Picture 1 (tube, one colour):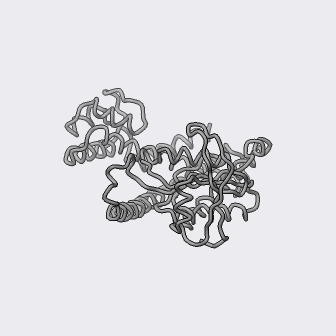
Picture 2: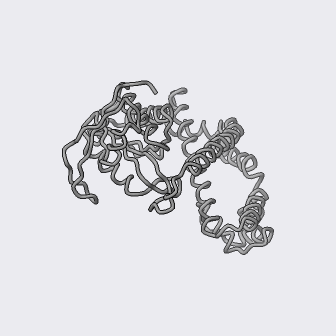
Picture 3: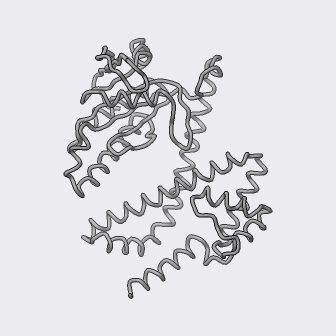
Length: 340
């Protein structure tokens, strides 16, 4: 019981630290303060990832009221459509949800190892100690967002300035080089790992993210035993794929890997990337042999034309019947091992 009381007291402290105090305001109060309707507030709240609020229940603080007021004002001043406004709110809240979970689990795991505790004890300790991390986590979040936004603005400005005259006729707006690297025989190998599977996946993710960044690419997402990466041009994409393959093959305790690489037109939504090149890259990775990077004919032609540098070559690979694409003649990319 003492642990329960201590945790309850700690959570009340976090409510003050994170929300500015105990909830005293209702959805009606927030809507009125922002010159909005309760329905508009609940749309906002649902986009944040929370259940619609009873309009008369005091669930909110002055911090909530200020955030909603400022967002309503910005949306109206900027003339944002409701779908765009809600999409932006959904994006930031989804990322915050994933980030806070990531931070919690990383600290719990570290506490288990450092103090030799079981999972329950480690979580209680982490709850108690989180107050020491929150201020810096908040600062680092703002800092990393500023850095990422500045980098994105630079990339978009550079891309738009160099678009060809016929760009508007393309089906999708973003020309990118992308691919997948995945581990071979992951399902059968992981079934007997037990708790070691957590460390195994974490190790694969760390090595993959580091290698992709070193070569100038970006990770779109991790998919268990695979990494989906993207780059702004063919040369960088080839550098990412080859460096990632070299790095993973040299890393201990990683299963054999295979990969794909495609250059094509795609679009981005909700932080993800979509389009036929993504689907084709996924299919090609599935049929690649261990240690092989497969590509399609147009990308292979660009590589042969020297658009990816002098260290890479392509050779025809056995024809394959790919779901959704029919018969495809892939090409295998060969490269001289270099350091990114």
